[in-house]
Amino acid sequence: MNKSTLLFAVLLCSLPFAANAQQYLTREGQVRFFSTTPIEDIEAQNQQMTALLQADGAFAFRVPVLGFRFEKALMEEHFNENYLESHTYPNGSFEGSIAGFDAALQDGEQHDVVAKGALTIHGVVQEREIPSKVQWNGTGWDIDSVFEVAPADHDIAIPKVVRNKIAPSIEVTVTATLLPR
Amino acid sequence: MTVGLLDGAAKAQSLLDGIEAAPLVITPVSATFKDTRIINVQSNETPGKNVLHFVIAHRFGQINEGAYALWGLDNASMRMAFDYGVTDRLAVGVARSTFQKTYEANIKWRALRQNSDNSMPVSVTLYSVAMANGLKWSDSSRENFFTSRLSYVNQAILTKKWGSSLSLALIPSFIHRNLVEGLTDAHDQWTLGAGGRYKVTSRASINAEYHYALAGLPTEHVNSLSIGMDIETGGHVFQLHVTNSQGMFERAFLTETGGRWRDGALYFGFNLSRVFDL
Image 1 (cartoon, helix red, strand yellow):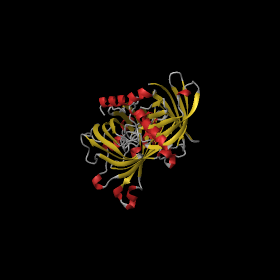
Image 2: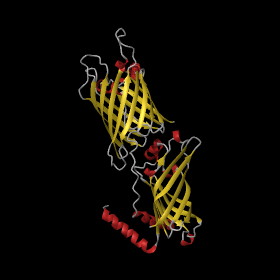
Image 3: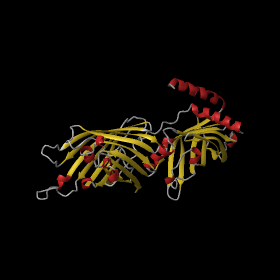
């Protein structure tokens, strides 16, 4: 796609939204994942999540897999090369909506909500209902979410020899502050 | 319910479609090769910071010895090596080979690293090794000097990774011997090597390397050609190969390779590596 087409597409997308729904955006949302076993803890951080929330509750995020940083270089290499195959599947994403999201939540208190939608990791889509917390911070929305992802649900094969080092279910924490677009 | 979900998903799809992600932080390309060696020769990789990389390698006898010597498996030449990552770009190592009872001390520095956005299109790694022959003096009656045992190899390892599967290397090497056998033998030699790997699965690749001596070699020696595969099992890398070089340190395989492929005078061998976090 050349630049002018892209610009046109962006305009085309943003015009109707601008007309009917406020949007909140971040390009530096944080994603952390944590795997714990008696043998080894593995943790990685990513601060490059793009997320967008719309006043009607529509919500999506996208995380570049290559942006995860590990404590050990070899872990990062194995993560990208062997498990997530980030060259083939460069992004993890969520596309859905926050059930019961409305302007009444804009009271500065933290509210429990459920994000319902399609979670895509390693090219495999899972329909998920993810409990999350939203809070109006005066200008935008703070979003916090902790949920579990099982590698097996996303066709991520873990060889037997390392199965005692990688948890069967991995804790994912998403933290972001979305500001008006 | 289902309709609502699909509806939501469809809406969300259009949500991010027009939005460009923040540009990826530019990172060095990782895993150009699975291990610190392609087969015999160094790759661009080094152990990570504070990682001890232990390699145990064997080259068995010549395959053309036949069934009597179990195609060479009765004999083995061994190399044991410890490489330590001082930083993510600098490694130092020591090794001992049974071949000529040779000790090695080496240093490896990733001078330039290929970047994810190709703003740096290749990696350049420098490798320097000093080798000490540990055999008894062939003539103990004359005055022998320790420096006569020493030889050195300096290499520049140029590598490039294309996509996730194909990596190639170009490796010029300079070999220096303090002591040579004959008056007319050269103290200095140059070789130009090429190597590469192609990943066939996420954990296995086919590897090959060849080294050409620019000024030729004495008639009893030939250029080194090796073909093998890497198998990674998480923490371990197994490299299995067939090569016409029995020596596993640089001077030996670059300039003292004795086996000829056309005679089947080849060595089956493996490198087995294990990493330890210190």
